[in-house]
Image (cartoon, rainbow, N blue to C red; front, side, top):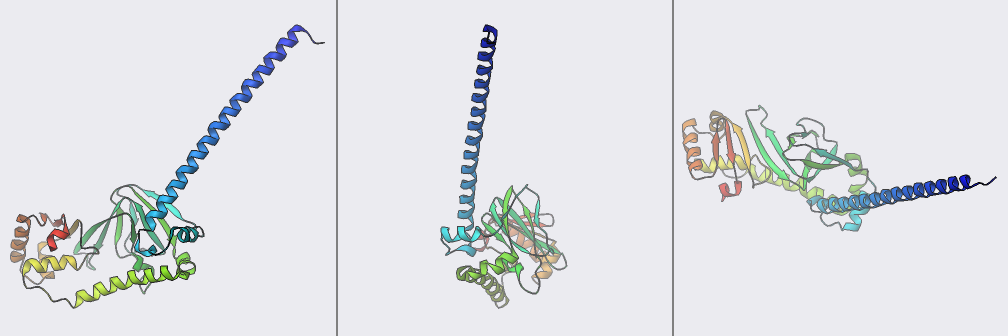
Length: 266
């Protein structure tokens, strides 16, 4: 029997359901709005990543559409690293290409007897040791540490060999990178040793770095540097102090800091 009380109960229930449905609809709207914004951000990040990678010599000559098609076939591994975190350690096997998409890294390389160490700084975009992926020794020769927060993406060696090498432009770019490094090393062997002590110190620095620009740090004892450039400790100390007075470098205990290498070699 339909009574007044049951009528009001029905109205109350209907209103409650309506409010519930409206609430559910509102939640769905917020949810889909979030997903839409999230997708836009992801798409934007992917576009930024593609644009960043295309700035590297390894991918020069590839258009955006072709490059997007290539990367669509591979599983990319994205990683965020805190400042001070080791990305790659010297002596570990190089089984992938590591691309720096964002931030700055510090790369340190030591002599075989660990008597001195050079540190360089590289900003994104940057590719870590592509020459270590192939050859008789496929281990990293340097330790690479995040100097700031760093974002990386890696591509496996298997994908490089089985897929990327099918593209002529990629093969040429890779060979050019390796050939340029080899030619640079070879030319250094046949460069005449300068007579001036300051020039020999500069030449020693240039022969141990990747890029002739930016800040460099050399950790070395004065005796070791004197032995390396075939001169006396006293003469080397005097030359370094003169270079410091000219603002070309900074001397610290067991360490030489070159704030701007371009100024040193100019």
